[in-house]
Image 1 (tube, rainbow, N blue to C red):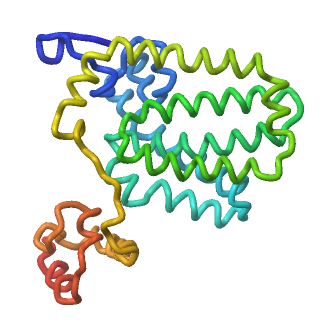
Image 2 (spheres, helix red, strand yellow):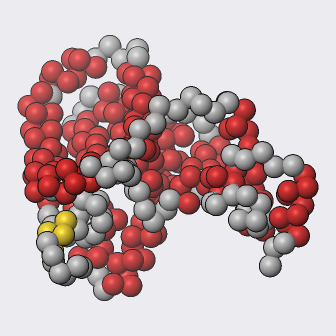
Length: 265
């Protein structure tokens, strides 16, 4: 986890840099496991593609079993999530794919657990715990916190009307206790080893002192995200936006859009 190869000084490679290391907590970063067994190029391909496949499949199942829509709408929902500007802009960093997949996976496996009385419920409970670890290692509060509230509401929603929630938890208390211990042990050890790095990072201007409560934008701003459709052929830099998220939240007149499209190329 701590290596001096990168900068000739002990450097935590797992928490901040998100590299593949030999540590039990790697089970919560499955996309990086390919680097441990494959060559560099194949490891990168596995990292890039596996996250897309996982996010797409989890989103598809989430739409079918949680939103209760048909396969066509589930496919459309999965496309909209996996290829959304939010996911694609931050695809290689900030664990946005893992946060979106793990959050939906938590809700999905929780519902499956509550609706299953046979032995499969232990498999669903294990899936819930696994996704809990993946979400925890997203390590990007700017996305984890708001999405966390959303997925918490979803967990509550799927629990409403389930009379056997507490009964199921109490009946499987030994499994849950052991499961949470197995899940939290490698996380706690990784955090303990990285405590010095965490203290240093918390003392930085960004992201350490970043603080945002939101609410300063009008809800109408959300409607501007339709401008993302123009990004493939629009010069967003000269149009006043630094990236697709900033570009989509600015008020553009027809003149800006036309001028930007004419400057393409």
